[in-house]
Amino acid sequence: MRRSTSSWTLLFHRRGYASNAITALADHLFHERGHHRLTIDPALDNRGAIECYRRVGFRDVGVMRSYERSSDGTWRDGLLLDMLVTDRRPRSAQRPMVR
Image 1 (cartoon, rainbow, N blue to C red):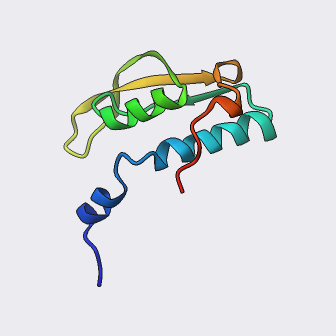
Image 2: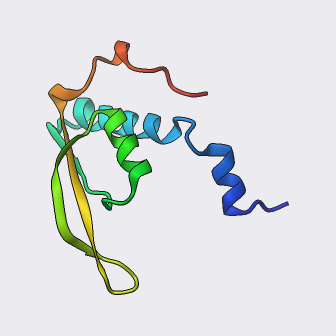
């Protein structure tokens, strides 16, 4: 049986999987690859993604006006967020991974 996208969303939405994945990636990039800053730039109206990135430790840098063109040709704003290696909480203070 094949599930629709919406039923998959109900199963996995807001359960911490994205936060855990982004946390693991940030830890890898900071501690294994030696990066000192990460940036991400979601659409300003993508509230769910922005909340997720902030939970992980990204901070707002600023709004990028008319940043990306949508499929209907209109321009949309984006939000620039960044995180420095010094912004990360120690691994022992982070939420445990969802299993």
